[in-house]
Length: 158
Picture 1 (spheres, rainbow, N blue to C red):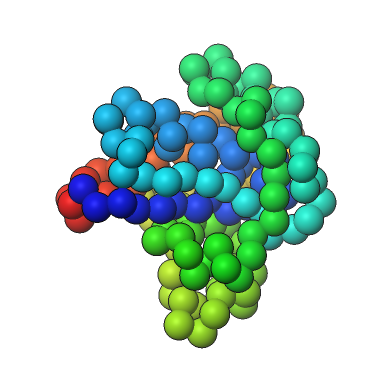
Picture 2: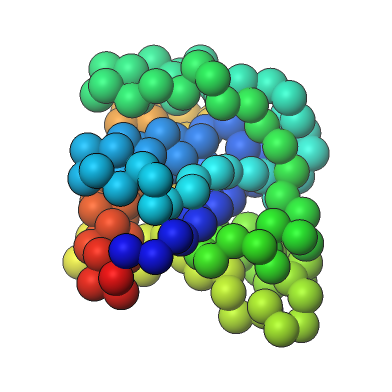
């Protein structure tokens, strides 16, 4: 498999995108592909730069065996969009921001993560920030499904 890079993006980089980073990283490690796939996450807004993921996200993730404590929020850059092979947004709003931010030759690179879990029936991963614990569990379910689909896609591409 050729070296590939994947960037997950949400609004603040404290709930959905670091969850996606942690889940996908674990799936990649379990598949023995950690040397071939570079994984990162970022936010479209600068609200939480330098902060760890939301405690509720970390708690939900840890119950499923995912480590997020070492992650810190950062803001996505134009350079990120150019540099990463896959730029995957959690929802339509962040996808629109990424496409506006993208250099002209990379306008089509940002996509929705849930495109890799089309059978799931939802195009966007909902933001769990203002809800209860069940929202974080739903986010994990969706991201696990999409991550598995993404990993399958990357393996097929070789």
